[in-house]
Length: 224
Image 1 (tube, one colour):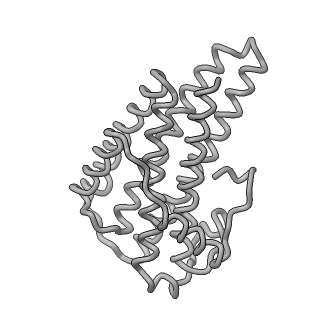
Image 2 (cartoon, rainbow, N blue to C red):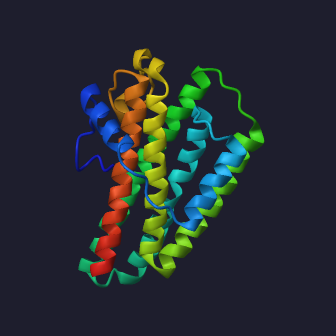
Image 3 (tube, rainbow, N blue to C red):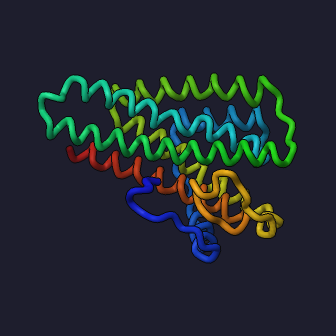
């Protein structure tokens, strides 16, 4: 989500309607790389949706935007002599930065929740291994972008579609979240939400917006 473009939805009624829209829609037909990633996460962290598993997702979620930003900055270095073209690249950098920052808020909020609830996490599975997975995902996204940007966008759309559905399912299967207030250090930075159910719906909606932005980039690349 780009905060410069639209005010985030925070009302419970709106968020519930968006959740129903997601839950009533089919998932994308994921590519091989995305399926391999999701199977790996299920094998290591279990199929059950948990705060700790979502936190791993958010560690990974930021890296495609970091990869695109890196490549774009290199491109600006070589194209600044053509200001109009360089400006378009720089606008892309700003958009990727906004998406990356949005994913960062997700991660910080989830980490805060894990600590508040006293959830115990192992160093290898929940600290070290996610960094290795993110490292692999970063370089995969970077390489695909260099080969053909649409390939990297498609992989990200798969990832964000998966995250969108997982967050909406998590809110649905935990009705107690409707009565648990969202009280966070990051509330003013992210969004003022009534409860944890709305938090996870809001995050799921963010992921949908990221997915749609990646799909729009594919279309632009196709006709450019």
